[in-house]
Length: 158
Length: 163
Image (tube, rainbow over all chains, first blue to last red; front, side):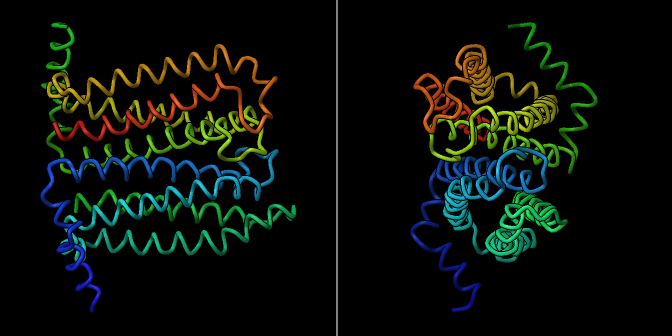
């Protein structure tokens, strides 16, 4: 099945049907999506600002990164699941939306970055080498996640 | 209450309010800023609340986390109040009668009261408990209240558009 086929299947699934017909379904899932956003935004900020050396300089970066990672991944899971439900409401339309495509590309990049180079940067701060790389990693991470949010907001507008 | 209603009508009919309401992009941009600043405000407060509940960052002392996090929360608060006031300005006459908007204001007052109680009582003696992995029950109660109230603020805020 083509990618477009999957989107159509999602829109025609029982989930899609429920989201399209229920009075408050979309609103409630949107609220859950926003609550997830607040938690995800908070955890990304704490880790990246520590990586930048702006806050919590007395604490080790990797400890902050590890301490927050579970919250970050939990809220990301909540956002992805509620996002799939939101998508099912008009998946066929989203498939062609430039803002949606942009958001998915940025999301993939943000997640890939988080698990690879970002993690490496956290480890490097731990070992105490004063390099430019952790700061660049923090800025890239902040911009990627911010981009996901802005593109997401644009889906409803474009 | 008549004064409040009159005030809302004046804002609504002002040229700036009308301009915001009828603009294509300004309203959406301010709305986006509002959402992002709320994420900054509530996300950072939630980090501190979850730490006090002993769910995350147990190795970090509560007061050093608070020193790092609270300036971010205040920044988020300032931006969300400013952007929120602009959004209100554009729709003031409708907001006056919107039940969700009223609920949101009450919830914000509650959140402020909860923070005030925490900072003037329990947090004063933070030195005695700041390094505990799970904080004393009074701190945990305010943390749970804070998480619940701020979540309700977000829910009520989103619901404004549906009334």
